[in-house]
Length: 357
Image 1: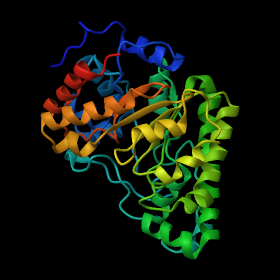
Image 2 (image 1 turned 60 degrees about the horizontal axis):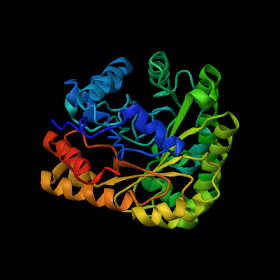
Image 3 (image 1 turned 90 degrees about the vertical axis):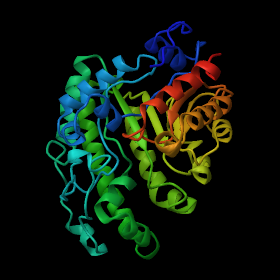
């Protein structure tokens, strides 16, 4: 087990507070971006973890105690959203059969079916009751309440299926815009309940964009079908006083970066990027008002040797620590649940070697 306490001058909490405030740090923080991995460390099945927010919170707290050199906190949620919320089914990762819950099939498969979709109730739809339970526990322990994660495009892909959605952007663009409108309205209704309950200043937003990556859609499609709705949501969140924001650019968003220059984001927004993107180039685009985060390859973390993980982590540190706005070391996406423990220690060794200012 790695111990950085002899070199550290700040606690994990102090380190993040200084980073947000733009004050000097002793070293780079490491946020593990770990849900399924925290279940593994807690020795609980991922099906139980995702079904029960109390278990997820306990697993998250256990991770902070097991790895005190990390800047970890309890997390809850998963990427495959929309289908369950709009009337589809969900498959749970019982016996650790999947990394996280997933929707087995689209809710609709024909463009004409968009008009048949009902408007879900935020109190009962899909993951929302579970998020509400998790938020109650989070606020009890002083952590922020989570606002609805995922972009409208992520939800639309879950409702229609990713391949259908991409085809419809070309053949039935008005249908896609209609679906995006319906999903955006639902996300705003969900956010309204959370913000009303806790206040915007006590909420945090994790805005992940996996479907918007340039490997899947063009920058023009992002501009037409995605950006207006993401922007609308951000304007709403900012108007309600939300200031804790993380944007996770999952995959390669290099050609979309220019569209983020005028997005309505608070200062010190965290931009987390995939390993496909260049840290220094991304840092120059987002500017010193925002914090850069990333981008250890998830594949190397899961399957590489400890030596390869240490080398990959040092690469990230070398590039990211140049960013004037501050840097957080993170995996390129969620930490793979089956990441070898020795590879986690390799990340700590790399920080000890190359992560101090």
